[in-house]
Each structure stands twice: as C-alpha cells, then as structure tokens.
Image (cartoon, rainbow, N blue to C red; front, side):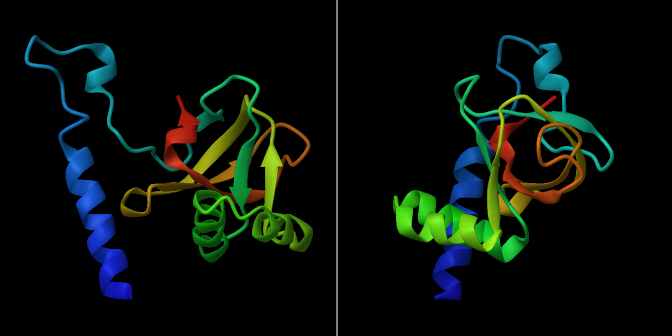
Length: 131
C-alpha cells in the first residue's frame, strides 16, 4: 500500500513539475517567485472563491485523513474530524505565518494569525496559501 502511495505522489510531482516554469516568451515577476513558502513568511489562506472557508488539520496524520475524506466526499468522516477537534475551518482571508512547507506532501504548516482560531497551528493544502 505504501509503495502505491509513494508512486502516486511521485507521479503527481512529476506531472506538476512542468507547470511552474516560466513561459518560452519570457519571464514575469510571478514566474520569478519560488514555488515554496519560507518559514516565517506571512501568507493569506483562501480557496478558489473569496468566501469559501479553508479546511485546516491539526497534524500531519489528520491532514492525510482530511484529504482522504474530502476526496471521497465522506461527510461523516469529516464531521467526526471536526467533532474530535482534529480539523476545523477558518474564514477565507485569514492571515497565517508559515512554519514549514512540505513540498512533496503538497501541504504547508501554518500558525493562524487572525480569525477566530488565531494562535492555533495546523496544516493546509499548499494551493490554498497565497502571498
């Protein structure tokens, strides 16, 4: 099982590796920025829509479970995580401090600096983290 997970992560990483480079026509300021976040960097959390809350997991194992439940649309599993305090929502636009960016896991560890959960640390998907 672990081999298949690792193979899947590697295949996704390889398929995404060609997506972040500058275009053949030249470089832009956005293309010059690194794809990873540095510890201590202040970022904003937001989803695809400005009002969509962001899901946060309390630790790495909870993050993996959160992503599994979300992909499977397992609302009972998600509800259990919320009730146990292993995951929570934070409003879009919440400011956070980066603690670590786990590039191969596509997740960023952050400490929330604003919003109702300010001071709490957790993991979010890296595509929900913005400069």
